Image: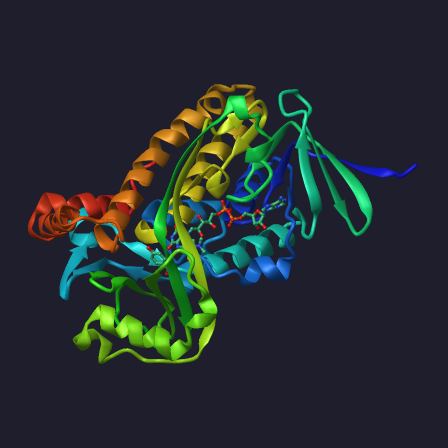
Length: 396
Ligand code: RFL
Ligand code: PHB
């Protein structure tokens, strides 16, 4: 008979992306034990290239969690960004409109900081855990089974946090008749390129050009991140670095392109664009957070930030439960998150709709896009609506 090793903890967290790691950190800060399980290796997790923009509230949450030191010294505050349309450009002055800024700091760096802090403090993160399977989720004693290096394990806990991203196991372990999915898949993707070159501008540029959307972003003053809209089924191998920079140059206009520094790609990949929400975000003692529960297209820079706000609410609710036995916030968790999630879904959908070329758009819809851009760039209220969402809606 095979021996199954048994582990006991208060919260079993599936997924060691930013959601799972930050939750583990916030629980630890309140004296609550957790075990984090991830199917990937530490090296793989620490090398994934993802988001780059942190909202004001995300920065505050990370600082309060005690994981913001390097972000404060190496991150770059941006007081605005540009939106462009058919060669025109307009700066959304975040600081003047809202009094707030956003922080440019890569998700890759944030993940490294979170892993290092958890491990330094003796936290338990199991990397390369195979066949992670949550069960007994409606009981008071859920169990999460996994395998590692030929051994079988069982984690016994009070709560399971499903922080395992869009393709994880947690959401799918909710019976079909107990959840509802809402989804839109966009008819294009983003081809992204990372290079050790000086960013083409001091702030981000989002541009809608007749050849397709383009985004100029960065990770630091010496590392650029660029994206161009591409067909959803595009083959990344079709794009040499030069072909990418040629196309980007066309879309950002001659004047800006004149200052574009080219350099070999450190990473080049295609991300699909999707809007998705699972309701509710709880099943028994399983709580979903981050991409496991919802996906936004990246045009508003919201995915990581939404993950951080979910975790803020979940940690607060779990701490309250363990400290005082009060479950008011746990019971309200899904509803509190979903109210904010849908507002952020709306903003990400809106930004994506205004800034991309849609293959099925009629001339009427093209005029609507242009009118939207004109409204945003010529009305204080229009610019404000973008700015207050971009710096982040307040937490409830
Ligand atoms: P993650 O980061 O996907 O982490 C999930 C973790 O779960 C593990 N996992 C499993 N573990 C055990 N068993 C299983 N069966 C498992 N299945 C999966 C995975 O290995 C992984 O470690 O989800 P999390 O923590 O919820 O974080 C969400 C963010 O990663 C995501 O929303 C952002 O990256 C989205 N995003 C952006 N968000 C922003 O706020 N600002 C941005 O500027 C921004 N830009 C982006 C983005 C996402 C992009 N891509 C590639 C989708 C730009 C891009 C190109
Ligand atoms: C990025 O730098 O990766 C980035 C920035 C802004 C976005 C999306 C991605 O809206």
